[in-house]
Each structure stands twice: as C-alpha cells, then as structure tokens.
Image (cartoon, rainbow, N blue to C red; front, top):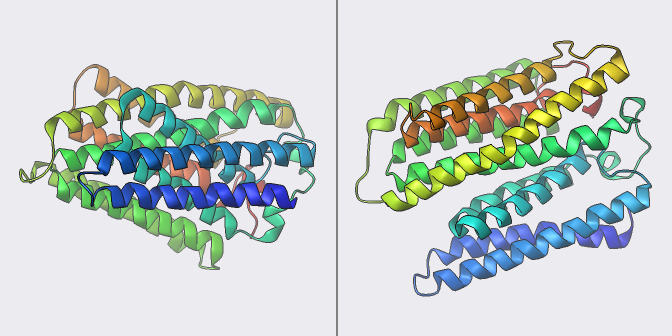
Length: 330
C-alpha cells in the first residue's frame, strides 16, 4: 500500500469521525444548528471524495478491480454509505441522518483498520475470485447493503420522531448485540456457537421487545412531520437498494454456475441473501398496500438491516461456513 493511498484512506476515515461529531454537536447549538449540519455535509463530501481517490489508487496499484477481500469491501461499504447519504440528503434534506451515516462509515473504517495487516495489504487474488464476474456481482451488493443500512437508521430516526422511545431503545440493543457478536467473532477466539446465539438471540429478543413496546408513546418529544419524512426516506432507500440486491443475487447465480457448475447450491450465504431479499420484498409489499403503520415498517427496516449485517459480515465472523468462507481470515 503506497503512502499516498494510505494518506487518502486515513483522511477519509478521519473525515467520517469529524463529521459524526459535527452532526452530534450541532444539536447543542439551536441557533447555528443548520450551519453546523451544512459543515458536517461538507466534511462528509470531503471524506467521500478522498475515499474515491483512495479506492481508485488502490486499483491502479494492484492492477485489478479493487474489491477482493474484506478490507477492500469495507472501504467500498464506507464509500457507498457516504455517497448514498449525500444523495438522500440532497433529495430530502435529511441532514440529521448524517450522524448515523457517519457513525456507520466510521465503524466500517475502524473495523477494517483493526484487521490483520495481511488483509490490508494488496495481495494476489485467491483462485475463487479470479473472474470478470467479481466486478459485476459485488459492487451492486455493497451499494444495496449501504442503502439498507441507511434505511434502517432512517427507521430508527422515525421511531424517535414518533415518540416510540422504548421501541427505539430495544431496536438499538438488538443492533449493539449483533454488532458485538460480529466484533468478537472477528477479533477473538470465542467459540462460534456462542457468537451465533448472541447474534440471533440478541436480534430476536431486541426486535421482539421493540415490537411489543410500540404502543408506548412519549408525546413530549418528536415531530409527526419529521417522522413521516424519515418513513419516506427509509422507503426510498429500500427502493434503490432492492433492485441492486436483485442484480447481485442474479449475477451471483451466474458466477456460481461459471465457477461451480450450478446456479444455486443452498450455500449458507446464498440462502441468507435470499432471506434478506425476501425481507425487503415483504417491506415493499406492506408499504405499498399500507398494511402496517409507519412505526412497524421502521422495525421491519431494522430487521432488514440486521439480516444485511448477517449476510455481509456474519458468515465469515460467526463461523457458519459454506462455499463463501474463503473470505475468512482467522
């Protein structure tokens, strides 16, 4: 990794942390809140541009498409998260979503920076990835994952603005426990069985209690108009991410047939990608037919985010195995 590429990557990572704190501190200054949020958007833009340059530079240095291991996919995920947030902010003016988008991007940067050096260095492709299908199949998936995360975070904001504080709290608990399982699975030798219980159990309990507490409303906070806006943003993010995920699943089948001689083998990661696709298909159905309240749809979006996290990172860090386990580094 060249010094220039390292500098650009670090600049992008620092930008996400700075933008996170700018967005957070903006809430403490009511008179200058809008100005500080605009500064946060500008810092996010700087991070997006420098990370774009870093990814391009990595591709030139590696003389291949720069998306071949976990570290590179995390860079792409952070890039997609920042870019998709900037798109949604430009369209809907949801600057308040910036602190969550920056937090997600910064977390991916930190997650990548703590990986073994062998993951961060440019290395030859493993045989399973030597294919033109890699640059066709993976980028749409990464961008769809970023959109689904933004949809889930918009769902959290919708719960806040709707006064569903207890539901919001339990949804956050589910996300924290699942993320903890991913982190422990990546950096510690804890048995995968217990990590799987932590991820699945924490998700089920957290989401279940969040759903149970939807009737509890704090009328002292929130804004109905803002709640409606975040419901719309969550929906629009899914409507962008869903066709990209569909493309990723289809091209994955074509690549699998090219590499393994079968379009579908019920590999664990393939199966979970299908479950994730079905969860967002269910969200779209419920949203279009108005069969659920906005708050229930927000929790469906959070469930989709948890499934996306499991599909994206869970199968390498939680020991589910399968044909896609070549990305595991422990």
